Amino acid sequence: MSRESGSATVAAIALLGVVVVAAAMLAAVTGTLADRAAAHSTADLAALAGAHAVRHAPGRSGAGCDTAREAAQVNGARTVRCVEFADGSVQVTVKLGRATASARAGPAWAGPHREGPGSGSG
Image (tube, rainbow, N blue to C red):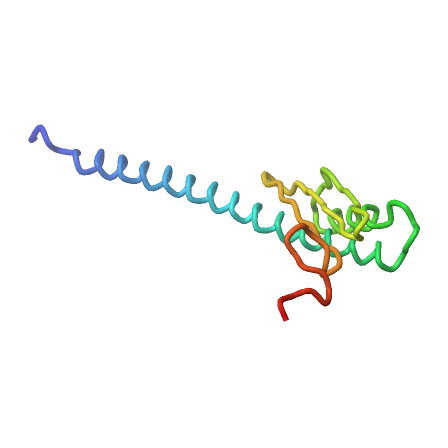
């Protein structure tokens, strides 16, 4: 019997081990990316729901964040932070799986880099 008898089996097992490790790493990265995308979508939705509630319940303190929390929870996320701003916008930070994401929504003129209605170089 030759000294190299069975070496193909050892090589095949080693190759199989590399494939299994690579597949596990790919699954972990894919899961993280999926969590990240879902967290961003959920934060967007929660912020929009919160801003909508602020607009349709003027004077009701906390309406935006209450609604944003409900929207996040329905989508499987936990609200980490929520802030209602005087301009009617709502900023929400959510955690979903291994990812955290933030979003802000409100009137079209809200935000530091937007011009108000009627402005421009006209």
